[in-house]
Length: 506
Image (cartoon, rainbow, N blue to C red; front, side, top):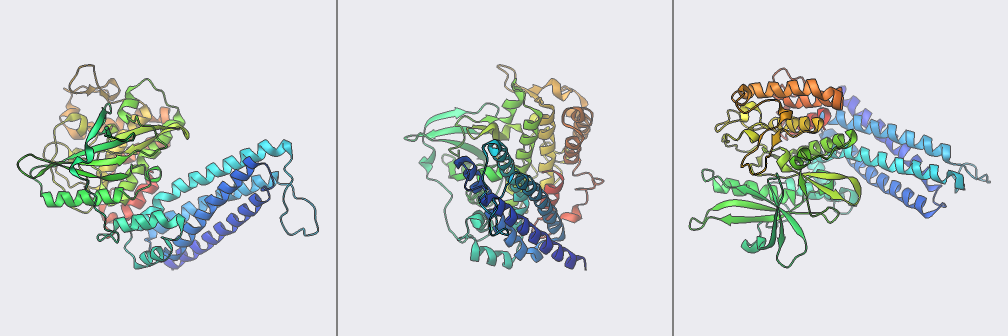
C-alpha cells in the first residue's frame, strides 16, 4: 500500500506541476507584445519550463525503478517547485491587465503600461532566478537517477535522450557510467600533449595552469602520482574510467572541470608510468587565473554571509557529483578547490580538482597514507597516518567536506603559509599548536573541530549551517542518525548514500 501511495503521489504531484507550468507559460505569453527586454525574459522562462517538462515526464515514466528514499526526496523537491510556481503566478496575475474583448475565456495580449514596466521586469527576473535555483536543487537527484541499474531508464534515454536537448547531457553521462561505453574514445593524449610554452603555478593549490605551445588557451593540469607498489593495470583502468566520465560533465552543473584527456608521464628506463596528468579545459566564460580556496581564506577578502553560503553549496554539490560518477575523491581540502572569476556573476565560481588519490567507489583501496599534518587535518581519524585502519567510503569525503565548510563558515584559514617557509603552520584560527595532543591523537582533533563548529559557527553562520558541519564531522559515528547505520546504504547501485547526502548536506 505504501508503494502504491508513492506512485499515486508522484502522479498527482507531477500533474499539478504540469498544470501550474502551463498556467505560468500562458500568463507569460500575454506579455509578448511588450518591450524587447520583457520579451527576452518571457522566452527565458518558457525555455526553463520546457526543460523542466521533459525531465518531469521522464521521472514519471521511470518512477517505479527508484528506491523509496529516492522517490521521497524527488516528491519533496517537486512540491517545492509547485510552491515556487504558484507564487510566481500570483505575482504575475496581479500585474497583468487583460484587454476586454469578445472572447473573455482566452488570454489576450496585455497592454503593458509604462508605470508597470519596472515592476513586470523585476517580477520576471525574480521568476527566472527562482526557477534556476530550483533547477540547482533538482539536478543532483536527477543525475543520481543515472546510477540506478534499470533497463527502463536505458530504454527511455535511448529513445529520447539523443533527440531531446534537455535529456542529452543525461544520455551522455549514462553512457559514460556504463562499464562498456557505447562510444569508444581513447582518453590518453600523446606524449607531447603537454609540450608547453608557459607554466603558471597556482598558489596554495594542488594543480597548475599550462598553456600549450601555439595556443592562446590555458588548461588546468592535475597530476596523479603512480604509487610503485600498486597494480599498474588497475590504476590505469581507474584513470581511464575517471577521465572518460569527466569528459562528459557540464562544468557549471557539476562544479567539476571537463577533462580533455590524460598524459602518461613515463619513468625513464622502466617503461612504467610515474604519474598521470589530467588535462582540464577552462570554460571560456571563466578567467584564466584561478585561485585556490586556500588563497581566498588566507587573503584579506571578506565575503558576505550570502557569498559564503553560496561557496559552501558549490563545494558540497561538486562532491555529490563525484560520487554520482562512481568515485570517491580522498583529497578534499582547500588546496583542491579552485575559484574562477566570471563576467556573468559578481561571485566567483568554484570547482573541485586534486584527484590525486581517486578510486572507484566500489573498487579497491590501498590503506596507505602519509604523515603530513596539513592533509591529515582534513582526514577522518580512521584514515590518518601511514597505514589508515579503515577502507575509504563516501562518508570519509563528507568528513573532509565538514572541515572545509568549517573554515568557510569562520572565513579563516587553518593553515598559515609564512614567507620563505617550506611547510605551513597551524594558524591561530585552528586554536592549537603542532606540539599539542590533538596532532598526536586524531580523535582529539576531531573533537576539537566539532567544538569549534558548535561554539563559533552559530553566531557567524546560524544554527542550521552549524548543524550541517557537525553532521559532516560526525557522519561516521555510530550514533549519527543520518549516516551512522552503514546497513542503510548497502544498495547495489550506491544510490542511497547519495540520496541521504543530498537530503542532509547539499
